[in-house]
Image (cartoon, rainbow, N blue to C red):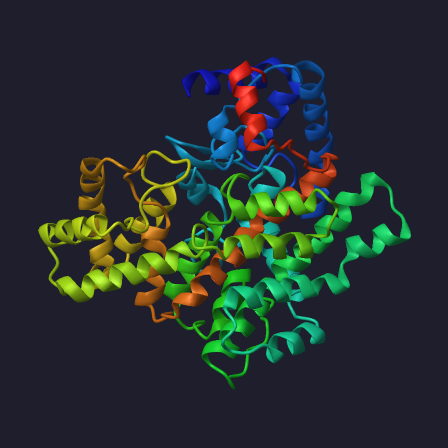
Length: 473
């Protein structure tokens, strides 16, 4: 790890383009705060293009890792084979967005008026540009998204026609795919456009997608769980999540809205190797528009081994609370953990495919809970806190978990539950609203950098065995 990080640092220092990008990623805004998001991206693109060209010219034949049989047959786990510029996930440090940790982002990214937590617009700006937006830029982006946030009538009719029993994630994927009807990228591509213009139409679609996700997700929630209730109008004075919370019916709950702002912002990007992000990248590499690309990502997110995990965590936590009672102790939690493990089940919310330390997103959500007296007194919140104090030692003793520490799912659902949003199946939809931030960022940059169609080489079992025996690469 130290060797790898040292190598990456030396590459940045060795290249004038690397230095430019490093400065762009880790300082306050470099340009005047009146510039629009599109204008800011347009100024960043030549630097990134030059950096990519430099890497291709100077380092194309340099190895940054060996492909082992275990990588090929183990779901490509740990294989370094993807460009994803907006965030890097380090096994020890956790996620960084353009070099900034979650605490770093909490210090500098603008919040909503009257709020304290990062909002989606400021995180989206950082992901897309590498720069910290000003308050004015953030407010302008909030208004732009609110103005674009209404659903086309055909999508409203489609969602309203779906059975209430259809899983909310399935409905979300269907709705996002249907937005493709109005894709600017698809229309421009059919008419003929220069490759250098791909990113501008991708950005237009991407911002429209992000803008419409709250109305789409809220409509699904109202149809499934509160049929007959009327959705409030989008308020141009509210940020993206403020409008989302209002449309869900929780606009008066300031604390829940603040929690949703934090959750959606820090959950928006988690490098490119996770299933939903990778799916968006793969489908996008075919030049499918952002709506089709992200709808595919949502169906990946819906799997139990990915986004569906947070509802399974809460189900397990409530089962424990029911069995041990409100007055939980470390010992009763320890006994329940062993009961879970001895039954052949995993402890949900613990372990991660990359991380080897507590997830910084979990820590951020825990700190949010500690700042709210009503959360500190909540039995389910206290259970999460005490489980964190016990579970790592139990899992280490069990010896079958590479990472015995909590991931973000260990804490995310319990706060929603405490504030009254108790519909488990809907939790992954909130995740889907969040993860769009990172996925659309990469779609824009894949077009700006001219990244190619993704096409890895596959092998049969026999071919893999022959290659392994011969020592061939």
